[in-house]
Each structure stands twice: as structure tokens, then as C-alpha cells.
Amino acid sequence: MSLVLGDKWRGRVSERTAATVRETAAHLGYRPNLAARNLRLGRTRTALLVVPALTNEFFARVYTGAATVAARHGFGVVLYPSPAGIGPARDPFASARAALDGVIASSMAAEALKAFAGTDLPLVMLDSDPADPGAAAHVNLDIADGMRQVTGHLLGLGHRRFLHLASAVSSWTFDVRGAALADALRDASVTVVRAPLDVQGAREVTEHALTRPGPRPTAIVCDDDILAAGACKAARRLGLRVPEDLSVTGFDDLALATALEPELTTVALPAERIGERGMDALLAVLDGRAPETDDLPVTLARRASSGPAPST
Image (cartoon, rainbow, N blue to C red):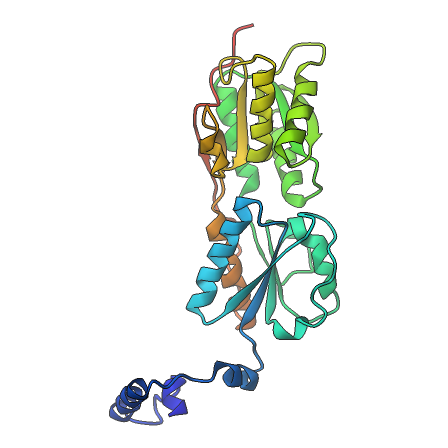
């Protein structure tokens, strides 16, 4: 029976016998003991997904993608959001490391991974520096191209004075966004200010930047949709119209992007696909196969928050 139900019968028993065993098992309601099988194979069929926080819709969608692929292969996904959202976390894994087959982690929660230093658990990093030797595989988005799409769109609308509302969080993905923006706008006027990843903090930073002496920017390029929401609130408090007086763009394409009025022009990131690819990569590593290495493409969602540059 074990040969047939474990799908190892071919060449060892006949097709007719295998069919009879399957029918008998179904009639009796037989279910294999997965715990015993996993113990025998030396696998728990469990992956850990480490993300900054589930309060951010993006990472909830990453989890959905990873769990969908995992379920198709008989794996489970345990989710660990870093308590503070980002940065260092307490070590919750001391008794759990032996119950894991591997780890998938966002680069924004990299500090939490110190708990796995020195272990042999395979690690798949999401949205992280591909040159980092500490991971068995990397799953990345074409973040730089996303920023090029945003800046090309705004330059095409005649904008030449920009405010880059950058994330204050230290992360590879935000560094890539900043570098791509600086390169694309090297012939334009760009002011860079950093803001915390919350609407209130972004609003306050934007208000201060827009009321500085000198020519006002005509477009704000934000590292994240949450920052863009704060920028839109700042514009409204200052009596500026979006996009007539000031264009605003985001990054991620969260549900928030279409809840804003006007709806937000932003870079759409395939969050569920990132989770799917991350789980695929971990399964490949566990099976001794080479994971896919090409970056996932991103697209610009053009909406009403961006428009022609206002006349001087």
C-alpha cells in the first residue's frame, strides 16, 4: 500500500494492482500519516516567511502567493512579522528552527534573520541585494525600471522641478529607487527629503518641503503609496490642487492608491507573484535545482494624480 499511495509503484506493481489499492484506500477513508512520513524523510515541509509587518497590505499579498504555492506541494507556511514593523526583533525561533525546512524573508526584515546565523537552513531573500552571499536564492523585482517609468512619465508631462519623498527606512530596495531616480533626473532639479513610512509623518515632511523658500516643485515622486497619501494630504492643507498645481506619484499600487482622490499614479508591484516565486525558489533549493533568477517586471498604473506641469 505504501508504494502505491506514495506514488512509487511504477515498475514494482501492476497498474491494475495500483488501481485496486487506491480504490480500497478511498473506500476505507485511509489517510497517510504525514508526520511519520516527514520524520522518515527528514523534512517538516514547513517554511518560515519573515516580513516587516502585516499592517502593510503588500506583505499580506506576498504571504498569499507563498502559501498558495506551498499548499500545492504539501508545504505549510509559518508567518513571522517583525514586532516593530522593521528593524531588530526578539529571537522567537530558538525552539522552532528544527521544525523548519527553510526561510523566505523580505530584505526590510533582515535584522530578524540574525536568529538564523550559523544554521544550515536555506534562505531565500525577497527584494534584496543579489550580491549578498548569505542567501541561497534571491527573488527581485525590476525596481529600477519602475522608477524609470515614473520619471519618464513625469518628464513627458513637462515637469522639471521634482521633490523625491524618500523612505527613511534603510533598505536595499529604497536605495535602488533613489539611485534610479537620480540617474533619470540628472538634468532636472531634484530635492530629496526623507520621511517615516506613515501618512502623518509623510504629510509633515512634505508640508515643510513645499513651504521652503524658492521655486516650488511641480511633481512629488514618492517611494511608497503610503508616503504619497501623506503628500496628497499636505498639498490639500496648503491649498494646492492635485494634479493641476502638483503631481504626485507612488510605488506599490496598494488598495490605498485607488481610495485616494484623485486616484494615485503609481508603480504596480506583483506582490502575490513575489510570494509565489519565493516559495518556488525555496522548493528548488531543497530539491537541488537552480531557481529562476530573472527579475519580475513592474508596470506603471497611470491615474489622475499626475498631469501636465503647471505654467510658470
